[in-house]
Image (cartoon, rainbow, N blue to C red; front, side, top):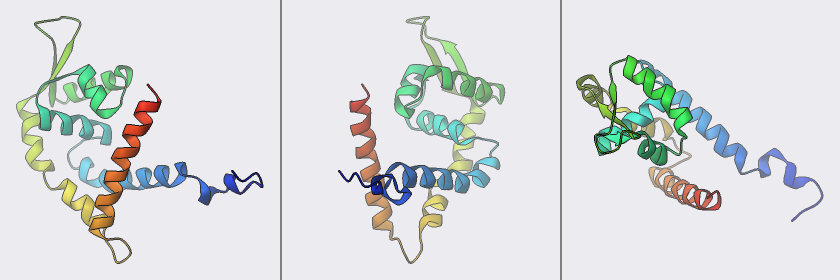
Length: 151
């Protein structure tokens, strides 16, 4: 490890490009999600529900790496918009289940082209589709490694 201070240079940080890329990516999503009256975290919840159907708050939190105190107000706003419905599990009343409403199901067809638009916005002469796919795979590995370390 270098002790001359170069390890503290911005360009030598792993956290900065991850942070900046995430922030810029969220900015690209914003107009597409605004048209659906959704925030990015709300969109992530919908992605889980569109893929897996009804889920408990705990299961959604595990998928999205979010705590229930972060999810609960987000889910409340989605419920106020009549996109999801929250209810107690019949098997265990401590468990809150989240289900898409008809409106939530219909939003899927409105959102279906967002991933393609996002990927297209990443493409240019300096980065290939293969590099983007490799980055995604690497980020998933990093998430797994960090998740294991934080357990």
